[in-house]
Picture (cartoon, one colour):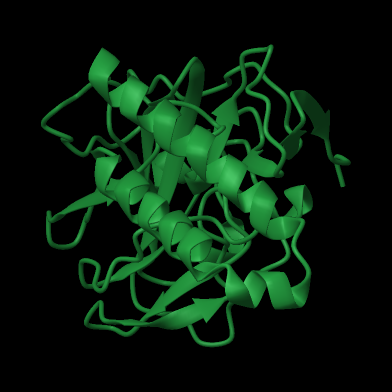
Length: 254
C-alpha cells in the first residue's frame, strides 16, 4: 500500500462519511431534494471501489484459474467491510465451480473506529463441514493482510449443492449465487453460527478436501496436506467478532 493510496482512500472516506451523515439527518422531502449530495456520495463510492487493489484470494483446484477480487486491504474502516449494505464491486462472473467465500481475521487492537458494524469472522481459520461433505466440493485457504490485521479467506469450489445452504461472503450479510458456468444470478443470505464451523483443519487437509496457499506466495500455488501448513492450531478466539465504534465484542461459542 502506497502513501498515495492511503491518502486518497482517507479523503474519500472522510467526505463520504460526512455526506452519509448529512443525508441520514434529512427529512424525506429534504433527501429527495438533495440530488447533488446524493450524486456526489454515489461518485465517491465509485471512486473508492476503483481505488481498491485486486487481491488473489484463491486458485480453483479444478481449473487452475485464479480468483482475484477488489478488497480493502488498508483497514476495517472502509465501506467494503460494512457488514450491512457493504460497498463492493460485484463480480459479474467467477471461475466455473466457484461456490462461496467466507473468512476469519486475527484482530490487532485498538481496532479502527467505525460507525457501522464490521463482522470479520472468528480469530482463526475454519471450514464449514456441510459444504465440504458434499461430494466433489473442496476449499482453498489463503492469508490476506488487512491493515494491521491478519485475514484468512476460505473459498469453496465444486458443483452447486442441492438443498445445502451456502455461506455469507466474508465480511457481509449476504452471499452471491452463480450458476454452474459461473454467471452471477443474484444474492442470498445465511445466518452465520460458529457452531456450524470446524476449526480442526487437520482431518480436512488429510482428506484432500482443504487445500492451501502459503502466505506471501505470489504464484498462489495450491498445496496439499498438513506438512508445512502454517494454518494449523493457530491461537485466537473461536468466536465471531463484532467491531463497531472502536470496540470488539465476540459472539457466543455455540
